[in-house]
Amino acid sequence: MIANKIISFIGGVRLHDYGCMLKAYKRDILKNIRLYGEMHRFIPLYAHWIGARVSEIPVNHFPREHGSSKYGMSRVFKVILDLMVVKFLLSYSQKPIYVFGGLGLLMILGAFLSGGYALYLKIFTGLSFILTPLPLLCVLLLMLGFLSVLMGFLAEILMRTYTNRRKNLSIKLRRPFRNPLCAAF
Image (cartoon, rainbow, N blue to C red; front, side, top):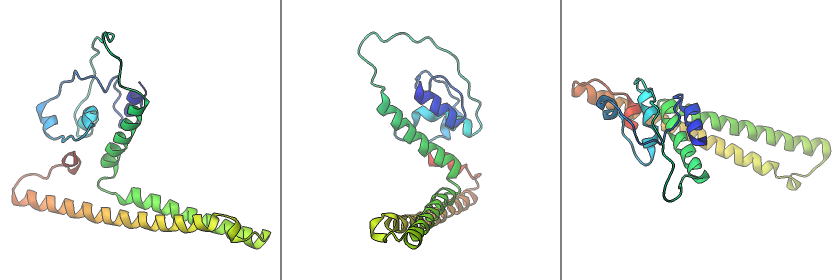
């Protein structure tokens, strides 16, 4: 129930049971969705994101007669991680610099704040830099921030190269350019 509510909230498609295996799809929708790993539970999200109408018809669920459920809290964490991947690909696959650059800038800001506070403690209270971890935190956040921004630049270059290559291929093949989001799955 928790995983279903989280998926519905983040994905924007309100369904009661994403794990129900009784599902029906149009062939055109599934043809444009590439799945890997345990991403099958997100097919309704993928379908909704590429423009399909998603609805739910209640089915009868009978109580388990044998064995016990293998779905526990550890599975909820796996669903959350998979959902983070799906959300990233949907929202930021075309602009990865927004994620990596945003995190990098936050870390650089944290570096300046921790460094400034360390200087404040040194100047106004006389506390030595050695007695506080703030200088190390400042250096760590600064390095991680710059690395994150650089990773965003690299991801942006890769995405633009991929998009330009796909456009050139679709022009040569005289086919329309397909949504890169669908190609990622």
